[in-house]
Amino acid sequence: MLSVGVMVRLVRKDVTGPLGIKVGNESKWICMCGLSKNQPFCDGSHKKTEGEKADKLYMYDKNGQRIEINSSNEVYKTLI
View 1: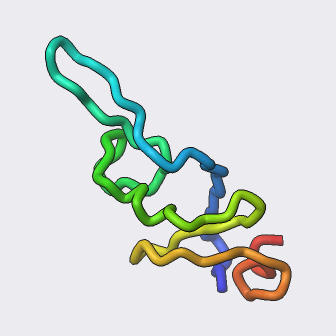
View 2: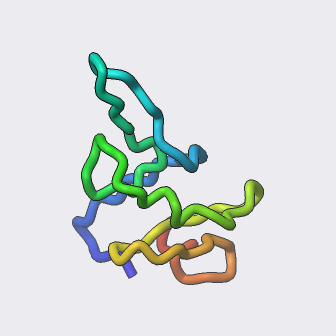
């Protein structure tokens, strides 16, 4: 349950892989899924999104565990 005074910002991300860019002769990978602990760079965390369904809504807890958001769970009830 969320406590009073805690600001939560949910950002929808539907990209499940990094963006590759060239910097000189070097390749850099930018996180597009929002899960990397090394922002703005990719750390491979997007692999956790494998198996997500396009018609579902998910969030990830601080341990990187996927939680499906739906109207019957407590997470949903704290968000509305």
